[in-house]
Each structure stands twice: as structure tokens, then as C-alpha cells.
Length: 180
Image (cartoon, rainbow, N blue to C red):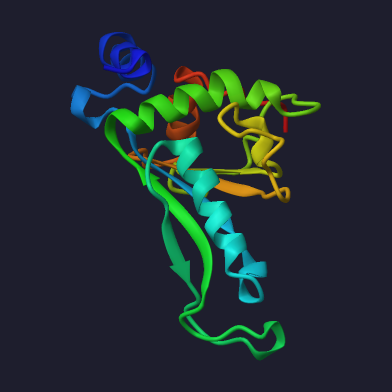
């Protein structure tokens, strides 16, 4: 079992129950899934760029990446419906907690000029989205084999009903929030 999951079950649930005044511990917010997405719009011209993005995402998460396809055609971008333009991974369970722990303890401190993540990136329903500009902050990536710099979006989906509950949950799980 992941160290963070164990800590969540033994300590954090009771702390959140008292802090957010829930009567039932099953009502306490929890992580449901983490979705990591890399948009590779350049894959319209060169499909091999998407293949390398999928390999890097698989290295980072430990899970095979799925391909995202265009939902509609956009002539200005030379995009046709059904073209492969992104790759994504959805993490749940043990892998989700392990990834979250690595993200908070290893990856975010490696970001240049890091002063905490923005507390404004909640969506109104307790879910948090974080954008990274470079995949090289992950220790799994060998920077000598990287062809180009790629950004990614990391969405942390929680069972929290409000942004306040989501922020309290993520703070207890170790997310370093900065000032507004």
C-alpha cells in the first residue's frame, strides 16, 4: 500500500472529519482519479511526435497512454475530425496515490522558481488542475533523449463538493499552495 494512502486512511480522514464537521467518515472528501494530458497539436504534420509523447507519459505514470482524437474539424489549424492530437492517462487507486506523492514531494520542488501552486485553479466543484511547462521535471525522463519540450495538464479529481473542501483535502495530502 502507498505511504500516502496509508496515512490518509489512518490520520487524514479523522482530521478532515473534525475540520469540515462531517458526521460520517464516508462523507469526507477523497481523491477519485488523476488525469494527465499532453496536447500534441504538432502531430497533425508529424505523427511520430505523438508516439514519443505517449512513451514519455507512459514512463512518467507507469501506465500505457491512450490517444485523444479531434472532436471536430477546424480548417484554420488544418485539423480533421478523428485526427490523433493528444495523449492522456487516467490513474486510479494505488497508482494514483503513488503518482500524487511523487508529484508533491519530488516533481514540484524541482520546478524552477517554485513558490507553491496557485489556489485559484479549482473548478468550482473541488477539482484541481495544474499545468506544467516541461516534462523534464520528472526524474523518470532522461533529458538526453528528449526531442522537444512538452507541457502537460494534471487534473486531480476529488469527491469534494466545494473548492474549500478540495483545498483542505489537497493541503492535508501535502500540496504546497502558494499565495494568491
